[in-house]
Image (cartoon, rainbow, N blue to C red; front, top):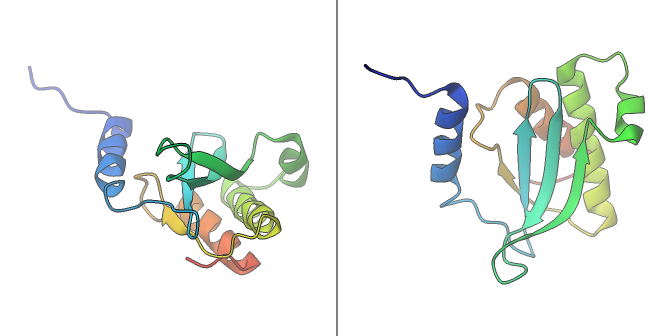
Length: 126
């Protein structure tokens, strides 16, 4: 019987291929996005820290209480833009001005693009 991979397995394969080229350093860390059905998560990661195992420098997600209070009643795309703005503000506080964008294997539309737009509007360069 022929079996078809589910969409998440295809996304994970795409993400694994992308990660050969996308590496976050201390000077230019990686902005990683994870999207679930109802939430979105963004992390800024230095892949060279801790002997190559990585170190999360900044994060923001719709599940945080402070963020959830801001996005109450919003559409998911608008909430994703708010998460992008918040992660960019937190990055600026840590002295991070430029990042490498890692879309996590997702297509660059909808909520993924909204996170990127929100981060760019706040001044994060990528």
